[in-house]
Image (cartoon, rainbow, N blue to C red; front, side, top):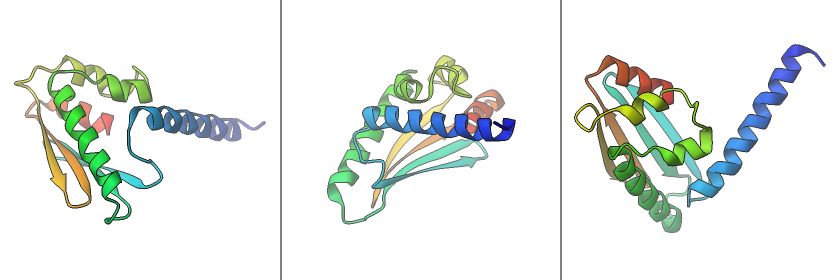
Length: 133
């Protein structure tokens, strides 16, 4: 097998594993929702949106989950993304070690889901957020 083909197969296998672990860690249907990660000058915005704006069940599940993890993240607990992506996820170690005065993590509802805003003045943490995204 050609090296490039082997790399593609390994990448696809990794995506399947992440999707399987994500389905266990996130209470909403991954097929009915969309994740959007936007890097900003001072951090980033993580959005989860229901593909069908009338799907109130998925929207509530999104909101509940993002509210829960935003509280955990403010406490330095990033165990849920670590379960999905592994402990070597880019940027994760820096985010876990950040003090509450170094990073702001704020939850906000959207009409069709929710978002978490990440803000820091630390270049190292901004870089970590961008890597994590």
